[in-house]
Length: 298
Image 1 (cartoon, rainbow, N blue to C red):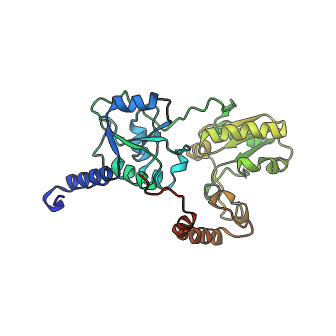
Image 2 (spheres, rainbow, N blue to C red):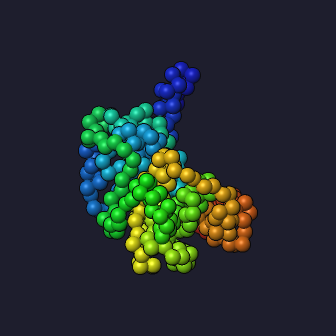
Image 3 (cartoon, rainbow, N blue to C red):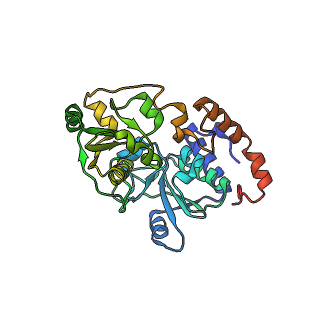
């Protein structure tokens, strides 16, 4: 036990986080043990940097994924696709650890979820750090050419080029390349007939890998040459090129990417989100009825 009033705020936070994590079985390890776990094939390990993405971009461990702590706890399956995998958390740049609060708090809550051994790394000898956003290695990603915004603008002015935006529907509504079509990869076949007399197609998305896959799939579906827009729509806007916005495009019934559970496609977004919240608030009762959820099974 400790008296938080007797400690500076930062020290009190560190002490509280350390106790919270330790009581739930989070282990603190050094760099050597972290590297040994990552090299051990007996069980999969995930190296996760729980800091803000801007801090991650300023300098991060090679091989670490950017997984902000709160989001990691709420959407673990976005980063971890294997039950019982080892989760190795980082919370610092130059010295491998900041104050440890974020990693320990995230680790404690991950242990509350159950099913994962969790480790927090502390070291004064981190590896050489990498700067920039996360660049996951996806060797199976198809190779497609990239076009710069200015070149795409010229192609659109000349005619014969179609743009397909496979980013988030909400982002498309807020701003997209004039004339672009919105869709998701799972429905590109239905979108292909809308390309009309296009002689080539360009895919754009916030995530370059997503655009790369979509471009290759559109080319296979249509037989047209395909490319991705370098830097996505953000690069287009940064180049001073025109942006269109329409809160009704795509229509509510088409915004399938915002639904987080099975839905009635005739519902509007607002109705579907209310239904989702009703489902979410009833989760604890569903877990109790199910009987085999491992929450809290440390």
